[in-house]
Image (tube, rainbow, N blue to C red):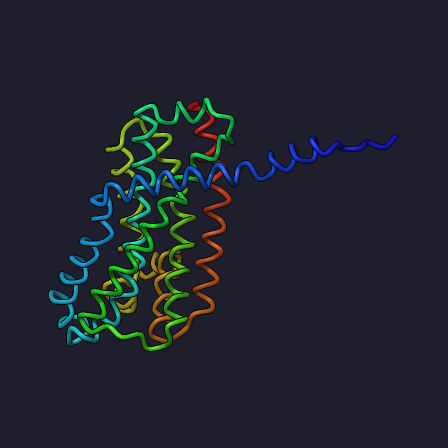
Length: 268
């Protein structure tokens, strides 16, 4: 017995197959428009990294590297990573706020995939990562930072950082769905990010750290991302660090994206 699909059935199957993509992109556009209409939400990825760079360079540059110029070269790629990762925290906060206000109740009543609002929120917040990298590039150039490799390599460093931040943001999505208030999301995100970003060679070389902290730095996935970014922008080992950063990214996405969707469905 042969089953023949009518043109209508084929169209319906195709519609279901690509529906999640279309719905996610439509909700990502909503998130992007909301961010652009309230530009003060971008202060954490524009002013904050500039303040960090100024503080670290002028307070620690002489002590760590002997002069501010050399320290800026060492610091800026790591600050780029830190800023983009902290920028992903807003995804969980905004998601929790929308859920608390009842916006997602409306989404649940629509004929869309349950994961579409979550995917849309994460995709819409990619603009934050781009703005963070652009802001740091401008302030770095003004202060004297110069790429030692090539422009394509520097762009690749930014893309690698964005990929890692996108995968890490699913951790914040899970926290945003589970927590009952935006304050709890922000507090939990800070507790997760501080050991990941500051427990690295961001401020000082790994060799200057105590032994127990060096052990953490060596296994910290953000350390691999920072070293890969430095290698791509300044020269040095890249392949091993980049591979580990991508492996960690794939692992976080594979674990936390399904957990976030499952938690959202339960909350629904």
